[in-house]
Length: 104
Image 1 (cartoon, rainbow, N blue to C red):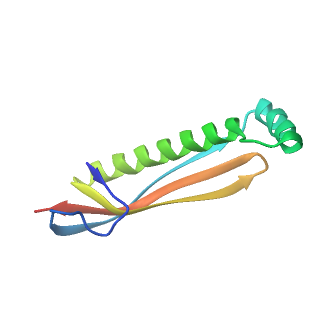
Image 2: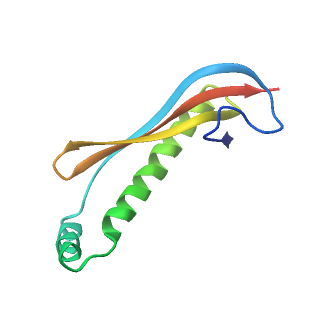
């Protein structure tokens, strides 16, 4: 499965647009991440617990989007984007979405 953020794929032609596909995941932060974040606010630096959480959430959302595209028998997903929103205190949703296509 080809996944790109562009509307086209170099060297390939899109023969059919199948529709929008998406994958989302909601994740909550671990209490220990808050302690680390509090300390980093004092001394500065990367909030590694949050970085790992968001990377994991993006990977999960992307994989769920790919599963949906495969169910549609897509060859690729173009114009892929990510979105993030807070859904509750300490919890966020990450969504991956794009357009499933068939290639020539």
